[in-house]
Image (cartoon, rainbow, N blue to C red):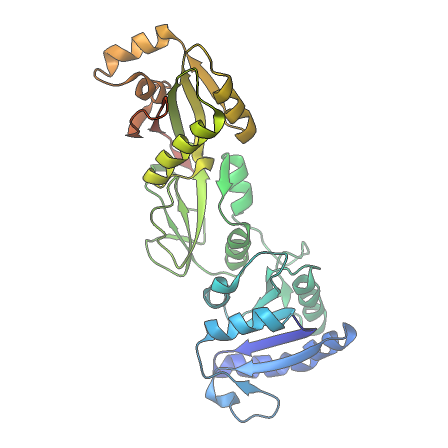
Length: 340
């Protein structure tokens, strides 16, 4: 990357607003010993001195800027910015800072903060110079609504992509609508700012399965709702157990993070399985012969490891493997209700 800020607008109004902020941004850049490069997609900016027209796809432009810029400014909605730069993301260690500024001049939103928080620092500068609210500044003027991180923590869920979570929170704070979908039963109404949908640019899929990416950029909230039943022979090793478990999860398109418990059929040597569970922080239970006998009458014809998967009593079997290398695995989906 170069010591550079790149900024782009997409419409006539966006270009005029971009141009009105140019002096303020260049002042901040000079203090950081950075250069600024100005781009536009709307024809009103074509031929204007100091602006480079972008004729090709914005995603290609964004990919190039991810290579040569430390900060990228999008004069558009967060959702539009994410659609264009999302494919270029590699991780916070290498990605530039990204700032989205809405065309009405209400919010400057650090979508990607940058390695040193550059996007946030620039947003505070624009707040001081131009009166634009710096989202997530923690100061007066910003009302905080639904927090993806807090909701996931409160409900013991795992977030699939921290960057997408930040983008969704920023989009909500700036008044954009976010898509939401789940196959699981829900109690209560969706929080303000969300719409039920199966298609859209940015959204949440609350599911243990990664099979369907409904949105162009999908954030999975992964509930711990999958019970695993397993039986092993005495001669197995942890690696073989893990391979068999992962094979079944891949077959079912299930996130390992969705495992709520591994329930083992009582046998002579469970130390390899205990080792696997400890290394992966999987909750671990041993199903006694008495417990299995009770389940046999309720689920006739099922194998012991399948009965272990439905041990909790409110789960339905969703898949199982044939016994290989002395290991057999089954998965069951718990009956869970989501609440907002």
